[in-house]
Image (cartoon, rainbow, N blue to C red; front, side, top):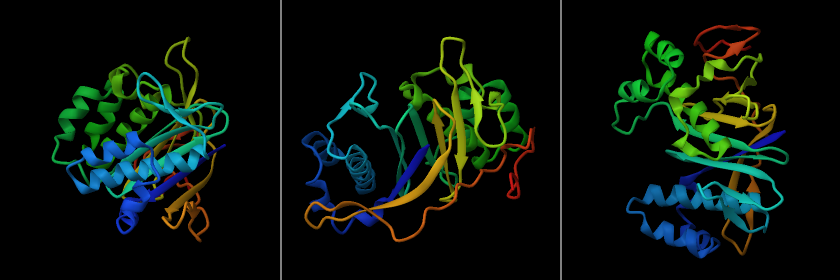
Length: 252
């Protein structure tokens, strides 16, 4: 089973200096290099989430930049807009992506879809070329790439997220015989943000938890006093054995 943690970056503004001091030298140097305050806050939130997950273990990086700790747990990081997010698994590799479905950051998402989407995905997107549909596909692709440790270096057009075939929510997709199976699930707990989780095991998220960082002494990773939110299926999912299109009443 997996856990999803998330943090609102604006909750760090008041104690930014003291929270930054909790990070390692390399992460602090990265924060200082950012010109925009929100970029620095996203990086700070990511660093704090990793520190919380590592539990005192040293955080290392693969040659392609994926963070890990020796002996586990496995985890993946993402951030977008007001949030940083992480997924953690005790047993298998995982990947996560989060995107604000109302923000394209001034880009042409239709043009990007043509460059990055498999023909099956592009066909679905062109039926209703809106930003939410774009991110339903994009977040899954990014989560898969992160699970593989490839980031976006993997050939995005070489596979379709619609190859997932195990209902109702955790769909299995295999990229050739030499690759391990990957399971995917979308969440919309932070609407209008979409969160995609990919894992090398069935995606069974047991909690979706808000993390608060507190800069009093070394207290970090205080859970909010709210219960975990039950995972919700995003629109346009494969439900009850058939593709049912997009709509808020799906998978219920």
